Length: 515
Image (tube, rainbow, N blue to C red; front, side, top):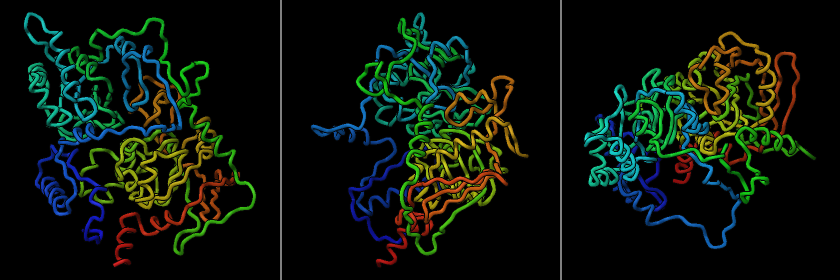
């Protein structure tokens, strides 16, 4: 094996499968899949073909809580206050009641009933029911002119079940375009992707900027029934049998026992402020404890701050999905496309050795490790955020990308630059109307804005991370004030992985030393 190991120690610890790129029939991809299958058989580990067997296994071995288990938090949701909602482009979190969007007559180019999320046999049956109910005099209703409706079952058995029930054929008769079971438009692979300026609606689980096609396309997310009804009418619409609850102005949900007066739920808007309060309230106290720094590991890391002012910049914004399964992408190409779905001008603004500072929950979205390695390819050794997505945080360590959370710095940068309107040459502006989205900013303005927002900004500020003292220092521009803040200790095991150049190189070294 490439890392120097001779066998897998615990055969039950991993299983191998084929998924996402199964539509790719190129010789290179088929050879890679063959090698994965042969490796699994040789090592004796579990192997599953794409779209096979895993669901049955999960049903047979369901997770359940132990008797007497305690919970860190209880949440409540009053179901009687729910009505169908649609997630607007570029953010799963920004949901709008369906009845509000229906009145806007949003025309569609494409509709998708695809992916493992909402394309099971039951979903396909619900979709077929929409067409059957809309049929007149025995003539099956058809997809609206100018709309492409793509379908792909969650798995081969799910498609077979839909075929046995005649639901699959009903969708084909209505004009649906079939795709093989697996991941396609949902992750930006294969045919049927959104072209520049197009609008689509999908029953999949993510609509991040550029994920389902071009960055300036718009992808809405909805239930299978809403997707099919929209494909039938040619605009975003429902099937007609869901009504908004009378007298209900908002969904009732929160944390605790369900008594609205005691609702303690924290909104995504309030969360950053709470995080800043918690970190500043735990400022250093008592004697300073020094961290042991490994020989050869830098005691200080510093750079000029480049600021990307957005929360929830996701992995699709950092590294476009269309490159995820291209194994031969060069380091230079990774650097070129880094952050391009967030800001296509990022590459010309950020420089080697910069310290990249971002908003809160940076790196949310998928698990792709290229989100970390692309930043390293850009020769940016250190990133700072108000908070990081958990998977990205782990991937950054495994890839040897240094990262530290400093919520106060994000707050100060927003105070200093957001209100002043100061711009630097080469900065790129985005409509202020885009502030409604908590994910990567939408790709285009909806009106002529009075105020513009800079996506990527060279600040002239300096950032220094003193690893030994577990403290960061920020100088706010030439001649500006300098302030410091205590941060978490960079532990020895993390230093070891980063110093070796990442987890894979660390494992190789450990195997080599133990041989």
